[in-house]
Length: 445
Image 1 (cartoon, rainbow, N blue to C red):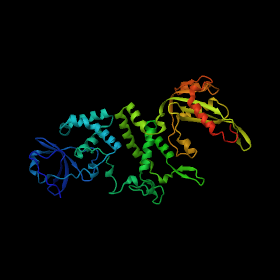
Image 2 (image 1 turned 135 degrees about the horizontal axis):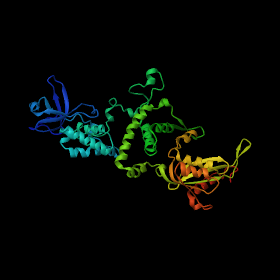
Image 3 (image 1 turned 30 degrees about the horizontal axis):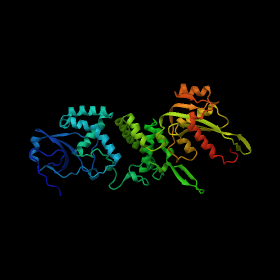
Image 4 (image 1 turned 90 degrees about the vertical axis):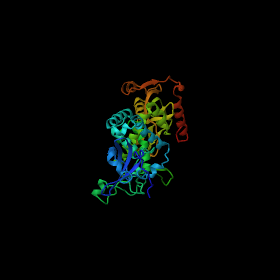
């Protein structure tokens, strides 16, 4: 039974939910925003439905409607704000998202005051300025403002509204075995197809978010490139009969469709871009990018110094009964994090060809290499462009390498002093560890 409300002489409380009954008996629900001496300013609402982007603010002449107060127009219990919004317990990440949205409109709500509701010209001017200040579109500001009024200025009014979607009691994000919703083109053409698609799962969404954070935001890759990297990461891991970990790509028929990933990706990117604009470049790099917990946090994007050095192993590679030669390995190590960012292995002595390959290997993502050697489940490999590259003085530093570094890719190429290990102690230490690890190999020294 509805709670009994007493209608004030001068109108209803701000943000009150009103029920209006038409002469034909149809009930509609309205959010009372405010009243002045001439009008009531209200916004139409719907039970169990979120607002569609922006909604107009209606004006009811007070003189014509005051006689209906308490009968055809009356205040009722709150029915528009859903229980999950009223009783929400937000975690740190959800609170941060909510604060970012509120910051976009907080100042216009304060500065505009009643004029934000009563004066369309003032409202349009403030929305335009808010969009410019926040670096977002005007429709997005209108959407946030509409939600603020629609849900009665509740503190959680700007929460994610995805819980309005889907059938009652069914969480689409958790269900992937049975495709729900509109069938895709494959299903329309062939009802028996195995490629009917899957719904998005929380696991896939978490991996997709991580890829976009690393590759789109910090790696400056396009969304389609990020999707290709995602496919390389989505692999099944198991152990073979010998107990060795093996992995293989997940079948496309078991994955959500590309369009579904891109649709979720656009929302993720919008949120990430909003964070970056609100935090600023420096605070974004220190406060957000540095908290992901991977080694690549220390050496991603623009990295200060790479140390290059190589070694020839004192053992022979046999191809059948043929002596193929002695293997050499060249490594690029980021000085601050001590992470191996690039490598190149070949047969023969140091040369410019090897240095160039190692250099570009350090600049590029390792996803495709990992998949090629069936270790795609390994993640966190570091890569990026450096400011300076330190090379060992030797035959590998040719004119062609120097030109590639200084003229083509605009990286300072520096050469350490001969026979002085302290100039590149980090990489020499890593090479020493590698040499020690193969001492037990037959023919190794």
